Amino acid sequence: MSDENSELASHSVGSTALAGALGRCPFCHKGRLFAGYLTLAPRCDVCGIDYEFADSGDGPAVFVILITGFIIVGAALLVEVHYMPPYWLHALLWVPLIIALPLLLLRTFKGTLIALQYRHKAEEGKLASD
Image (cartoon, rainbow, N blue to C red):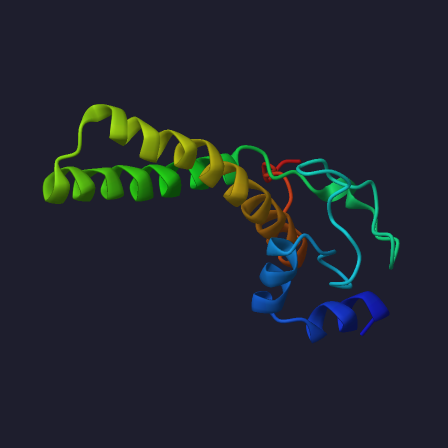
């Protein structure tokens, strides 16, 4: 086995997903994956792996929208049924959560999907004739 394959085999899928969720390098699990809040670093500052392969696309946003919508709509319905607060109180409760929850989840989901993309060597689909 080459060094890269033995290093990859030593990390489980779960630990790779956790490293991505924490914004760590999918290869060494030590370096930083992000240069900014959502901006991907060009390469790992520890092992030097190039992050050119990484393209999470719209996947993280779709998951975040679905999860955030489920949580907020469900919670708003429960509050409405049990307490029947006025509409201004609904706005006061849910608008900050509608803004904060996606911001908190997006980086985590983006890092996880990029780490899993690396782990499973995912690449763009090709036709058999290519």
